[in-house]
Structures are given as C-alpha cells and as structure tokens.
Length: 387
Image (cartoon, rainbow, N blue to C red; front, side, top):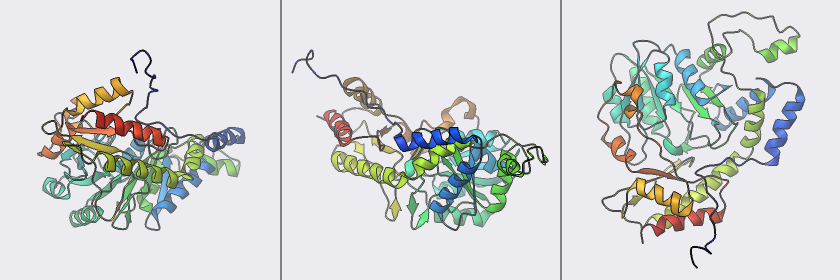
C-alpha cells in the first residue's frame, strides 16, 4: 500500500472520559430540579464514596477539586507557617501547592523503585521536630505501603493524608486506598477513574472533616441546603474566615452517575493493563508496571519505563514516534515537582529513584473509552519501534 492510499489514522488521545446517555440525563434532571449548588446530589455522592471505603471512614465532604480537598485537609489539621510536610516529588503540583498555601514547607523524599510510591524508609529519615504531616500519593492507582506509613505516623504523632486521586476502589493487603489515613483526598477531574467534570472528595476522621466542611463553605455554620429546607436562607452565623470549596449538585449529578459504573470502569482498565503487560513484557529496555502481591490496582495510569541503554530509543523518541507515525498520544507522570521554578529552593532529600524514573516514564493510553482495536493499535505501534 502506497503512502497516498494508506488509511488516515484517527487520533487516539491519551485519555478521554466515557460519558453515556445516563450521565447526560442525570445532569439534565438536576438542571430541571431548580437546585444547582451543593445539596442532595452532593450528599448522596459523599455517602456513595464512604460506602466504597468502609466503616473506618467516618465522614466525607464533596468539594470543587482534589486540590481544594488537599488544602482543606491541611487547614483543618492546623498545618501552617513553620511546619514541614513530607511528600514525594514524583507527583502533581497540587499537593505541594496546598502546603505552600498554608505557609508550610514541603519536604520532598524519594520513591520505591518497584511501585514509584513514597518510600517509608526515606520518609522516616526526613522526619524532624518540625514535621507535622505526611502526604502520600498512591502512584498511578497502586496503593502505598499503608501499614508502614500508618505505623510511622502514629510513632511520631504525625497527620497521615492519603492522596488517593488515582486510586478509588484500589486496595492493598485488604486495606482500601483512602481508608487508612487520618484524611484522604480523591479527584474526579475529567481524566480520572470517574469524572464529575471538576471535583474532589475529602474523607476521614469526623472531627477533621467537620472542620474542613466549615472552612469550605465560607465558615458558615449551616449549609445552604439545610437553610433552604427551613425556609430562611439568612439564618446563619460565620464562625471562621472560610473559603468557597463546595461541589455543585451539577457536578455531583455527573459524579453519582459515573460512580454507578465505576466497578465496570475499573475492570476495563485492568483488562487493558493486562493486555499491555502480556504483549510488551519481552521488549528489551521497556519495564511494564509491577503489581505487588495483595494489591488491586486502580490503573489510572499505565506507566512504562524506557531505558535508552537497553531499548532502541529513549522515552522522548518513543512518545514522538507514537504521536507522529501512529497518532497515539501519551503523557508523562510526572516531571518531579522539585525541578519546577517555585519549588527549586524547597527542602529535599536525595532523590535518585525519582530522577531516574522521571527521565524514563511514559504513560500509555489506558481508559474505559478504549476499544479492543484501540488497545491492539497501541500494542502494535509500540512493538513496531523495537523492530
């Protein structure tokens, strides 16, 4: 077949939300209800996520983003100027931004080479008298060593926050991601395991979530939905200088509808990941993601590592060829935040695993909107680069 007659490939994005008619109907019904802000849908969404996590999670608060949830978690725990918070550098900027916006200082530590999750030993070594909290991200949907982190936090009297943005329904050694920390946060951004468009959730200890809820609705001592039910929307007091971080019922309507399909979404992600691992495992210089025993992976990411010393190309070249020759988009998760301008003067410990992985990591498309043909297309395109 000549170039002139070759079929034109449709672009395959790295991620796209899978939106069905049921999702659209849920949002339309909310538009017609007359109640659009934080209300009954948000409350139902909170309850649904609490049920996912089990009886150990006392409360949940649906908010405008996972970043808002992180900020509220630290504020509710009293984290502020002079405090240190330990977190990995191989993460998105949301977590360290939340720390800086409380006046606290992020302290970056290294990750484990197998899972790319925060290393408990590195975390222990970074603890000082100023350390007040650990924020541990479940990288790509593979849960951290929750038991080790919980023991470490308890031993030193530290707040443990799980950044579970990638990991709703994931578990390790029988423990659900999001159920072990004093607080945990989830993301429902457009590319996450379920979407509410924009949105997040803060879950955890009843006392801390209650403080966060107060802070997240302007410091007002009762919700608009409750005041509406009483017929007197002006009957409230402002008890702390708060913020506006609540999730709207429009976002919650989409989130609730998506949540009903979350188990199916997660199973499909796992199928795609298994296909990739089987088909790509023999390629020299390409490392597929590990899954430790006792883990149910959330598979928000399918991150491969490309070693240019053993592979015929490096990560950047692979990404460029997949895009230009095959119209397949990929992504990088993440460029370490300690290399970004705002954090360059922030404390960090030795990060050899982080820096090595960050130079090699590439996320292949892995989402429930993909067809079997899409999966085969990615596999074929990657394997072509090794021939």
